[in-house]
Length: 206
Image 1 (cartoon, one colour):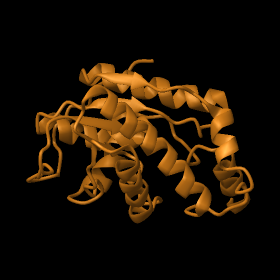
Image 2: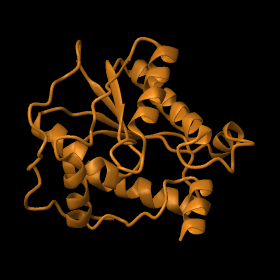
Image 3: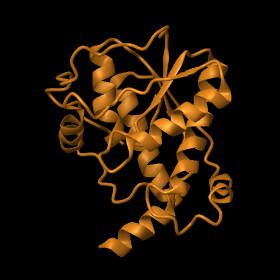
Image 4: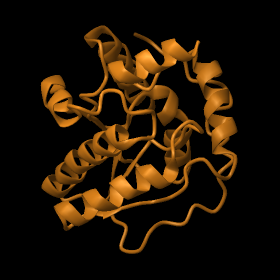
């Protein structure tokens, strides 16, 4: 898979990015390239080089997982960002959300899913001596930032020794920029969050 860098890449609308206290290094949990584009552009402008961590055992089927994984890898390689691919433990995710399959989006299933993915991310950051972690999960207007932040702080408190950066990655024009870059990069057009249950919900709504 190959991507072409847009001519205007580097034109982040995010002004005056303020680093959190005691910031030294960053692990960025990423769910996909479309959600990561505007954030990575912002980090590049501010000379921050996070480790991009793709840990998303919720994404199904496997073909969907591989599309999102491979597109993110292509983006990281194009921008020269280090990346790491976590284990694809689908059975672990299914066991985690057992009995919550019919929960609506933004419900208890999402709470568990976000908390698990961010806890694994926080643990990986701690293992590598990285001071902070954040996520692309709340870059979309369809996700609840409050729900994602709750999962992030739970992961921070559970793991210990690493801090969650709760920046609002939708403000400062980043939502608009996100969708601009999706078009400019011609990213794969995703139609659901990732898990099979969100796919079913989307299909029932259409």
